[in-house]
Length: 295
Image (cartoon, rainbow, N blue to C red):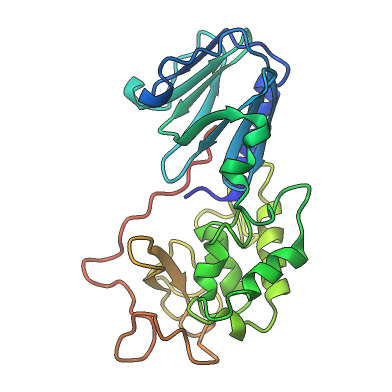
């Protein structure tokens, strides 16, 4: 699922293309909104809220979209060939005299009165990249569930909005924290959240998501996507496992040495004979679709 910085960058580019412009075409290719026509409506602003993209219109309505795993917005000049995928994958089309914004495989598409936006995003915690970011509140929400696995808690958008799997695993590695450790056993929650935010902010202005500071090819991440490869610090093989409640599992990478459990891990974790979370080994690593940065 795309990280908050992906949505932030998409919102920035969509804001440049659409803000203040009148839509020449504004159509939806989904059943529930198929009869809605936004032609003639002016876009007021485009902004991110965690992993949600909000397009506010001057008629008092807001269009909300979510990328999930495979969605993306693509922006083209009129007359340019659209290359985001086959036409049947287009969900929303917003065009002006200057730009054509094409939404592919978008999810959670809603058109609501702007005054009712909270109905869609009001459950979210503080936006880690938002202007109203509140570190203390985010940490308070995390601490409210002390028995939760830290790897699960960081992805719960009700605690703080914007962190995805990539920044979760990279932040945990940099602070030497086992993904299955209880929130209560994390010695510096403030430092952990602040590290994730620092990593995300470093990648706001470009599509590449680098967490190591090393720009050489293949050196951009510490553990993310590196199952079986040697840890860049200690040389141990990076492990890959599944974490999270049933039907909501997310793959998690970690170094068994640099992130060795310093206290009993969450007893609900699926464990092997070693007492550590069981890595995914049968049949090799499961495929993970990278969060698109195309907008």
